[in-house]
Amino acid sequence: MQGVGCAVRTDPDSIWSAEQAAAASADFAELHAAHGGVLWVAFDPGLARCGLFFCRDGAVCELTPPGFSVRSRVYEYGGGACCATEQGVAFVNERDQQIYRIDIGLDGGAHGAPYPITDQPHCRYGDLSFVSAWQALLAVEESHEAGAVVHRLVRIGLTGHRQVLIEGADFYAAPVADPSGQRLAWIEWDRPYQPWVATRLCQRESGERTRVLAGQGSDQALQQPRFDAQGRLWVLSDKAGWWQPWCVDGQAQPQGASCDHAPAPWQLGGRTYLPLENDEFLLTRFEQGRAVLVGCAMRINPLASVANGAHGAPYERRLAGDFTRFRSLTADAEHFYCIAAAPDRLPTVLAIRRSDGASRILAGGEAPLSEDHLARPQPFSCTVGEDEHCHGFFYSPVSTKERPPLVIFLHGGPTSACYPVFDPRIAFWTLRGFAVLDLNYRGSSGYGRAYRLRLEGGWGELEVEDIRAAIEALGGEGRIDSQRVFVRGGSAGGFSALRALAELPQLRGGASLYGVSDPLALRRVTHKFEADYLDWLIGDPQQDAERYQSRTPLLQADRIRVPVIFFQGALDAVVVPSQTETMVEALRSRELPVEYHLFAEERHGFRQAANLAEALRAEHAFYRRLI
Image (tube, rainbow, N blue to C red; front, side):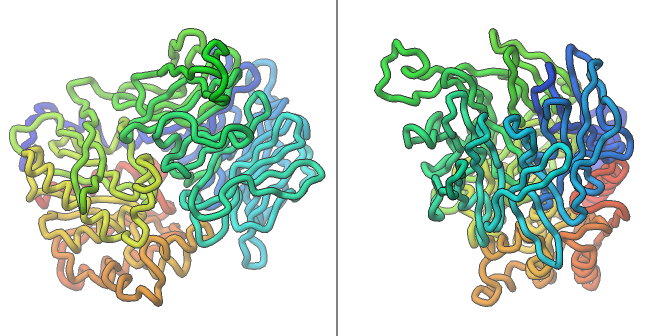
């Protein structure tokens, strides 16, 4: 390839094409150990659907027939879309958001067709769990009726009987019952807070009123309540600065290392730690953005003697060391299971033998590129602001003779994160002579509460400072060509990309994928879950009107002097097409080179393999012309 200093002798398309990169966006979710095997949901970008699979004794069978896709839309981002029951599995069907059940036969396949157990067309469901003592499901219900969106916790029998258990708060998550079914715990929060800013841990026992156990103020965010084998309640709290396990019924202090043990809960159903027997735990935590998986014992009683085993000196055993991200932890008597990711392979359903830690891949885990064609993530950190740092992962191009051009990836959220795992899009760029910086700007999760909340009031400025500092650091080290830098992002990342293009003249161009160009327009139409988020990120629209004026890409379009490419879904209800098209016209009116690609059947976040490939090809061709 000419013009980018690339010395790869083989045509990159023959190694890793846009179509291969799109197909590699397949992923797993919703792992459950049950019925002598393990259940999971797999996303197929070729079909743009999520199927439910069951694996037992090495045999894998899909349970969902054509026409069904397992996906919740509660809070728009979903999560917790399935759970195991005693006879099979219950799941949320994407098309109608109703709960169905499938029984599992002796052969491990579906026994009969999916059977609907809810008939509430105005409702969505998520965060499903099965309570054996009730022989019923526990779920978060989202009602869209008479123009109002209401959330509550409900109990749903396997034959469809529905009972409202808890209501009155603005939002609910992670309902869990103890084995007796007498004690119910959950997370709730109210506007204007987000679940990574301030939440409450609540409990109700039979015959008692609701009690708030933690989170009375705004100084902590709690997530993932769990009951252990002794019936004690645990939760992840960031009151001490990190999301760490706390035993609510025991010692009131954090357990485990001073690291985040979970990402920001954008989706329901997260399981990043698991209480086991004898005060033992399986948990994942982030160490400078890289996740580790450990089996450990907690010191529940600090006065117990070392001779008392798990109640004395804690121990820790690291597991699956080749992997760098872990999700959806579950376990049975012989194995731990998780969805794992690594820098050199596709997402994996992993079984880890409890006796000796030996790992076995149940699904996924293909290594699509040889070591010669693989760019591995290098931890990145640079100083920014007053003795602060921003973080991320840098990928050198596979082969180059000169300082390479750079593409900066900006994640969405913006309170989300990037991880040092194989990203098929990054491989596409590094094979074509580009370096990539996957940036965890200040405000990203995984680096503690203070880092995560640093973005309050600073969105649109703080991450731009981080981009500028990163370019200067990488250019000063001779790792990139500072005059050939591109920035790209989707949704909130698209907003940050447009802001950077307006503020940083050294940028050569950029891409916005369904990105926010008019925050106030977004605020008027956004859904309940994020209705107050922009006020936290930027400020009050009336009191901070000048701040909105200076940070709205549409109003600052005259400051963008380089080419931009836009990608938009025609069915997007979050960033509606008219918002992007107004931004495109504002730039075209100044005769800037602008491309606009509209995909008729996509929503907020592209899912169809053909569209993912087309967008990747178009973005690469756009940058190549600029170089």
